[in-house]
Amino acid sequence: MTEEANGTGEQQFVVVINDEEQYSVWAAERPVPAGWRALETRGTRQECLDHIGTVWTDMRPRSLRVAMGES
Image (cartoon, rainbow, N blue to C red; front, side):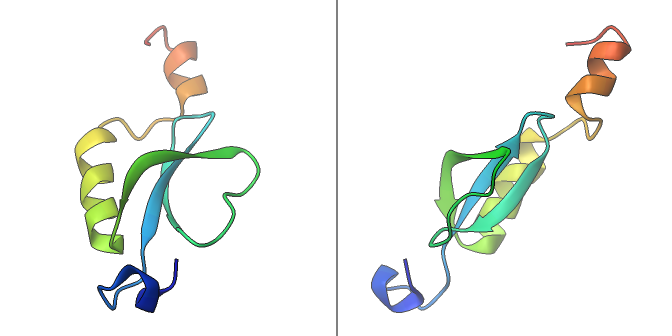
């Protein structure tokens, strides 16, 4: 979606996550890259970053957490 199409004048983003449960922000109008999947959270870049800051409390990759015996 372009900035004009969403009516806000701001580019829209989506929160994406990979198999290691690492988060990122991706431009909503672009295809999600291989190895990542889009979550339902969309909005401005800052809104997406705020969401990530709330849900991504352990920055270790999933494989490391599993190796250390955590879920």
